[in-house]
Amino acid sequence: MPSSATLAEQGLKALSSQNYSQAIDLYTQALQQTPESPDYYIKRSTAYQRSSDYASALRDAEIAVVLGYKRGKRELISSAQLRRGTSLFMEKRYGDAAFCIAEAEKKAAGEKEKNLIGIWKNKIEIQLAKLDHDDPTREVTVSEVPDSEVPIPEERKEPVPTIRPGDGGATGVTVQPPPAPGVSTPAGRIRHEWYQTASQVVLTIFVKGVPRDKVAVQINNESVSVSFPLATGSEWTFDVSPLFDKIDPVASSFSVLSTKIEIKLAKTNQNRKWGGLEAPEQAPVPEAGERPTALAGKPMETLPVYPTSSKRGPKDWDKVAKALTTRPTEERKAKGAVSDKEEEGPAGVEYDSDYEGGDPVNHFFKKLYKDADEDTRRAMMKSYVESNGTALSTNWQEVGKAKVETSPPGSVLSRTLRTEC
Image 1 (cartoon, rainbow, N blue to C red):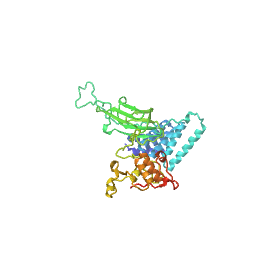
Image 2 (cartoon, rainbow, N blue to C red):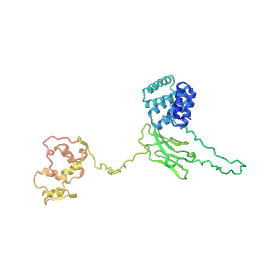
Image 3 (tube, rainbow, N blue to C red):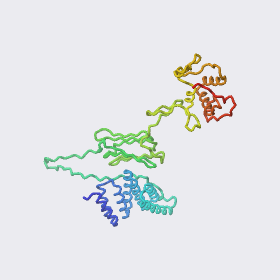
Image 4 (cartoon, helix red, strand yellow):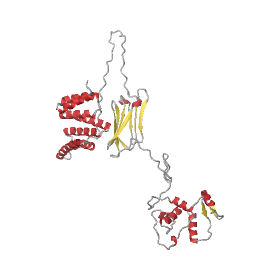
């Protein structure tokens, strides 16, 4: 028997010479050898359409669309959707035809195909303009990917020898009982794929011979679960929880076919693109008053960020305050700066405890800062730095909202707050 490529080549010649019945026969033979060729289905659909068998043309076009999406090739999807749209047009389903032509236009690449799509688009628009607004032929009843099963030809089986009554038990002949129904795909070769449209996510589990009454499929708002028994007696399970986004279990469905299990999950949020089948891991939400923690080894910012007009981004005023007003004990001791009248604060940090001459206003500010709480310190440092030393505030509720502007010179607050650093 000739190869599928040879048969397809002969089929194309028959199609070009308008011998449509021969083209259909040749492409049918080619599909027996290569049952998942979208191009063969597209060509046979063309032959069916030109021979006025529109139902068969539509069936082949829809199978071609499914195979095109399975391969993920834009040109095949576009050609299949175009053929699907023209077949629907011939059946006077103008709304459906317009939908499929629009899908073909999205994936069109070649100039020739774009021109052909434009011609059919105009034809459909002319027909739609003639119809009333409530005409049923205007309705769109199809989806981007049709619910069509790709037919797989049955493998040729050798006849099973039988023992006739009266043979007395023929020697050398073994009668093989028919195989028990069940999963024929090994567990290690069961695989799954998924794709999405604007309205649904289609999950396909490729496995042969699953008994329909033995499959358990559970579809919930945020999860999907599939299980069925294997020929070995164990159970194969597939669970996704939580899904990337919520789904509508009522509008979702599944079907058990001879070569696969297909599950259609209706999106709750239409037109939202899923980044994966399963939801990504999210950081835990901290409780009230609790600071964020690190996730998966990646440190998170745990200190508050306050308003600023700095071009370098937000400032951490706690850090600024600590840098300007504290110094490690060992460093000061090395310089001989620690006196008997100085005391150590928490964690080896020192503050001047008593005023020993100098500017009394400056000492007042230093004493105020030393005895203040954290909010007051942040307010003092933020107002002092942002006002260029012309303002000093202890009200963090006011200072923390916006930048502190420079105050007119001459006021008491324009004095420089001198701290050891």
